[in-house]
Length: 99
Image (cartoon, rainbow, N blue to C red; front, top):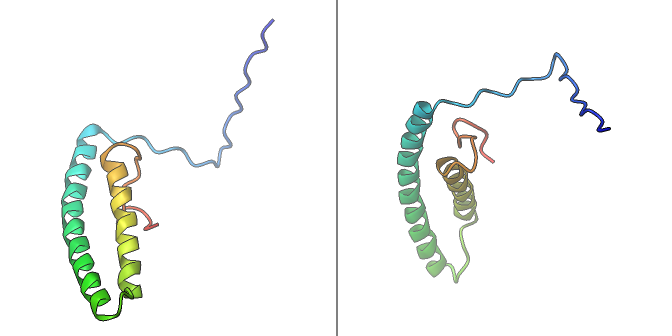
């Protein structure tokens, strides 16, 4: 005889998982985030050009602050791409924490 599967009840104070957004809302967020991605790519290109010029004038040493900014921008781009492709349901900053 097979034992029945026991599924415990969640505690009463446990937060409920949010309902998934409707596809219309997802489309709206995808369009907005798509525009933000376009702007971010332009900013990334500008930062890369500035960093290259700085490295030319500083014997190959990058500007630390600009490198940090580029890393953070890359993290945001990755999170936005995951939302756009459906790999993740968490929207990027400013709707969630900037990782």
